[in-house]
Image (cartoon, rainbow, N blue to C red; front, top):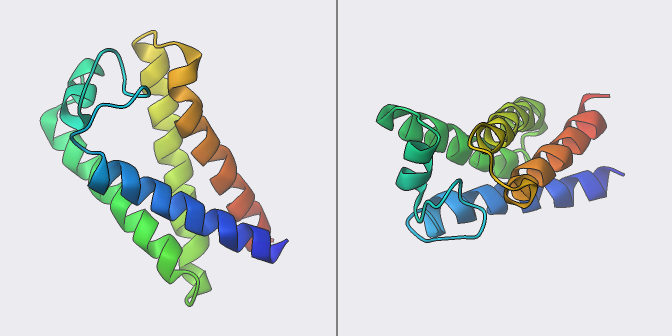
Length: 123
């Protein structure tokens, strides 16, 4: 089970980095409302401008911690727990703006995957 957790850890990390570094200013079918970029998406949610950078920074740092956690396992559970909290927030934001459930699937999936990582690594 540990190897499965490690693979999931890597998938989650690269998924976060993909969204926040490669697709930041690109439209995707999962953006909130009719947003076409990350900045527009945060505006749709009614969040202040600074929250984009705070949340993005937290996601990028947690992604790097998940990757470094391959060699420093003590980083894995705190990083995964942070991702869980952030993904709960993402799902809540989709609900807040009445998005179709399909738009929240990536956040929900990332949340479920990181719950598994925490369960395997914390016990």
